[in-house]
Image 1 (cartoon, rainbow, N blue to C red):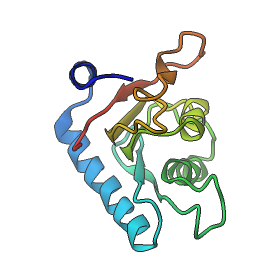
Image 2 (cartoon, helix red, strand yellow):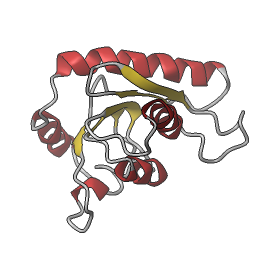
Image 3 (cartoon, rainbow, N blue to C red):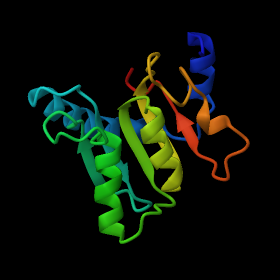
Length: 152
């Protein structure tokens, strides 16, 4: 698990501009509010294409959809893949309000996203920097740029 100093250094080293990240994180937070209003865990996500347009949106809905995979990240990936007509989404960035879990990070890696930007770390289930550091695993064939702590 990274301490606050390591997370701060991790965030500083990202190539993403915070100004742009704030706009898209606001969109993800709006999705999280939908989840909260629906009685779900308030997590939201937006997937942004290389053109800067939002290709997919999602908010947690596993309770209401009776689907354990209906996490915000998965729903945003599904919408973006349908729009793109391809399960691979190179050159895209996913903004999510909390650090993704193992399931979501696996889908993110399989979709070949370029970047992942998350708000708060998740010490209970985070698969990027908190509990696990999956993107740093050299055995993976896909590299993912990760930035955490945006609007934490």
